[in-house]
Amino acid sequence: MKKIRLAALAAAFIVFIIGYRLLAQKEIGQAENSGGGQSIEVVVASQDIGPYTTLTQDMVKVKQIPVGQYSQGYYKKPEEVIGMVCVSNIFQDEVLTDRRLVSKESASLGLAERLEEGKRAVSVTVDAEQGVSNNLRVGNRVDIIFTGTMEKVAGSEEELSAGLAMERVLGPQSPENTQVLNEYIGKEFSVLAMQDVKVAALGSSFFFDSGEQQSNQEYVSVTLEVTPVQAAQIALMKSGTGKIQLVLRPQDDNSRTKEPRGSVLQNYEQ
Image (cartoon, rainbow, N blue to C red; front, side):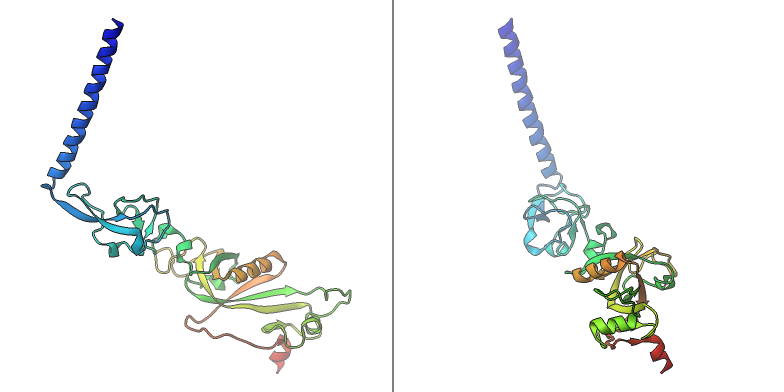
């Protein structure tokens, strides 16, 4: 009886394997017959591709597949996908479809895909005054003014005004673009720290032209596109007791101001 049971199980297993193969062959035949035995050219990955990768010519190729295997969403020519971005892992020889690729302008990619090469995004918290009364738009250019208070000269217990302290430590003409309230009174100073900086986002919105960016849109933070060094400088300005003020520039004005240090009140009187 034991041998009979084993023989029956073995026979059942063999029948299952044969049936599975016959069914698989039938499905393949149906897929081929659905297109009358014809095939089409589609674009596939020539290698494994990670998410958020921008497709280049060497990452894709054309392959023949049976008609009916992909009814829609596929691409026929490599130039249709070059420059697009993968939103998930794609494996070698996988057919590229519009569900796996998006354009570089797609909001689903986030802000990182919109930054220029070598640039970084850093955010500053602003109120209505610092943020130019909600008049900034993504893509605008701004200057950054930093205002602060100078308590004393490094290494000295002597109390000096900001103007005299800067002149003693840095010289009468340095740093450029630095103003003080008066050469002889007050400890407050302002510095035109950066010029011609791009606005990358307002709050969580980084769209140039969309329903999310309406006139007088309110925001409590502004994200700036800067170099790594500028990002570190902005972080330092944010860490102290000073204040960052954004100044809106004309959109096509790329000029740079280079003025020697002077006194605001004194210059005003002149």
